[in-house]
Amino acid sequence: MIADLNPRDLDDLLSRALAVDLTTEARERIRARLEGAVAAPAARRPPRRRTVVVLGLAASLLVAGTVTGVHYLGEWGPVDHPATVAEIEAEINSAMAEDALPPGYTYPVAQIRANAEMEGGRAQHVGTLAVQQRYMCAWTDYWLAGNRSGHKSQMAEALPAIVAFPKLMLIGDPRFAADSIRDEIKLVVAGAKAGDAGPVQELWDAACSDAMLVRP
Image (cartoon, rainbow, N blue to C red; front, side, top):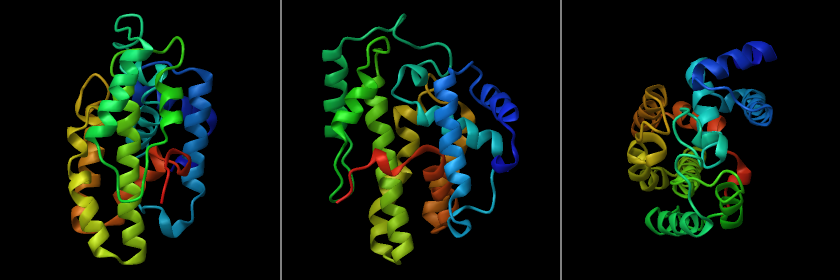
């Protein structure tokens, strides 16, 4: 269990999960997210927890769209793949137009721009990755809300988007996600299809937050 890990063990697992050295700031952000997930009400937490995989999921998706996220596999970043603010802005606009959100949800555009267009971290595809993370979290949130309220029609409405998560660049492109992440997302898709909230909630706890969404 993540709650049983001391900070040194957590840092070791993060390094193993991402295969790169993270900045102190990135580690602190990831640790805070994971501790928040562990502190969630027991009824909302899934009974299982694949620690290393969840750490990898939290770390890679939490920082996706930032300079740290782009360096996730150590082979992509602003030095080798530079992009201008205008190019990233075009990516953001294109991705938002392509990836429609649930009814009433809107993209936090200023937040996305701040993450993707920061000085020193501008690389190709970060605009797309930043949008896709929020797209994935919005549909995850929408499905979970339907599950909690017993609205099966809402869950069914969210299902096609969740089924398509593996096709997102954020997940499907090996430059930005490892096989363990894709395996985790497959479990999320299977859970959503079966009406099992456990894996879907696990994705939310590991990679999303209320601050990333603009709900109706």
